Length: 236
Image 1 (cartoon, rainbow, N blue to C red):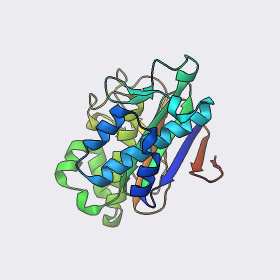
Image 2 (image 1 turned 90 degrees about the vertical axis):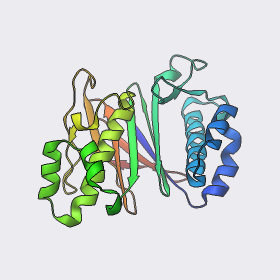
Image 3 (image 1 turned 30 degrees about the vertical axis):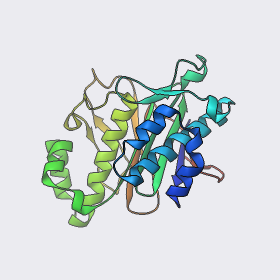
């Protein structure tokens, strides 16, 4: 089972202020280095909300949930947590007015959300992210679907890399995914030496012009969608 939390940023400045006490001094220092104020708010809210949600899963006060980064910058529960607690895997992404966070026990997860914008789909970016076959598939789609298809592709690959915890050591073009907005997300190919095990990708539907994808290392999983302060809804 994977829990996917969706957190809407209705008043990010106020939300960040309310939750800032849940950040460690190191996290506050990291937040201060963001040049764009909105990025700083999203980081603060995302990290504090993650700590609060993990506290609920682990039966701990949020302030007692230790989070650090692995060598590639992926957040994880730190060494102060018990071995059973450290079996909980999580990942967070934010863009625009949304924060998405994924949680699973015993297998890694990655998640990515991006605001869809046709202006951002440049030839240089397409060349950096998409394989030759993906570029041909993109060109075969109707023009009005190009932006959503491109961001489906991008978030699928970013979610997988975040789940693997390998940073950008794997070239995005070496991974191939489905990108047709009319079809479910599917991992087609990835370097086996860098992407071991059974990885799946799953498209996340959220309101507004956004693309979002979940990646998880399991043959199958039940995806449970949870909106902050609301009851969970199940997705088969």
